Image 1 (cartoon, rainbow, N blue to C red):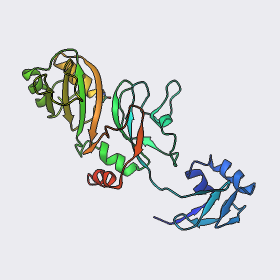
Image 2 (image 1 turned 120 degrees about the horizontal axis):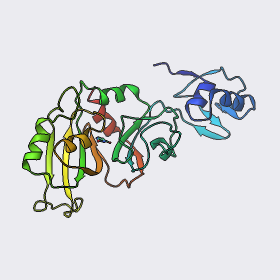
Image 3 (image 1 turned 45 degrees about the horizontal axis):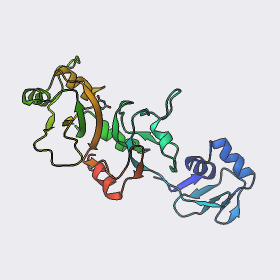
Image 4 (image 1 turned 90 degrees about the vertical axis):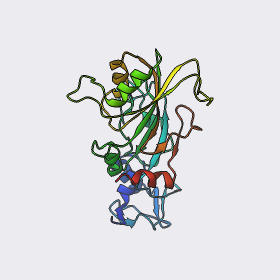
Length: 249
Ligand code: URA
């Protein structure tokens, strides 16, 4: 990938407005390149080594960003929405403005959502051919017994052309509930899917006669939701976490 980039594109990529707003900043003398005011928006610079200051603030170029968000209920997994707050509205410290969520969680679903501008990685994580594992913490209105578990594991008819693929189900019953994370008063199970159909978890449980009353994704492609993140909080992925996801390629 080329190291060289136009000054106005550098600014626009780094969230300094649109390309024309970037041009205006430049023509007003508010941008310095290696210490000198530059008024030509078409000047090319090395995005890794040249130093850009926008209104006095040194700005590093960032090609890709990767975040994990603990999505709260009530926000939509989209980049923009007429009626609702989006997951991107929660990212207040992002450098890039071309970020998007990797796949979708329903508005009322919580938990792990990867947000990036790396289209290739996103494609890999979502490709039906890659069978990337996604694990969900599920609370249901009724106890998920052995026979329901087996049905969920073996695949159920949820009204699509094909039944669901094999899944992993772990029922967290009251006796072996030794982790504070799980509230023993509730009917909790964990389900691991390798596909990502519309409302898949809710429809699968419905197919075995249970209603999902709370749903949270806790891992995707080996990446676990950081339990220190409160609902609505996010953090950048570490280099190790990014490499872990890239192994899927
Ligand atoms: N399955 C669902 O039903 N909803 C989600 O948000 C994710 C998986």
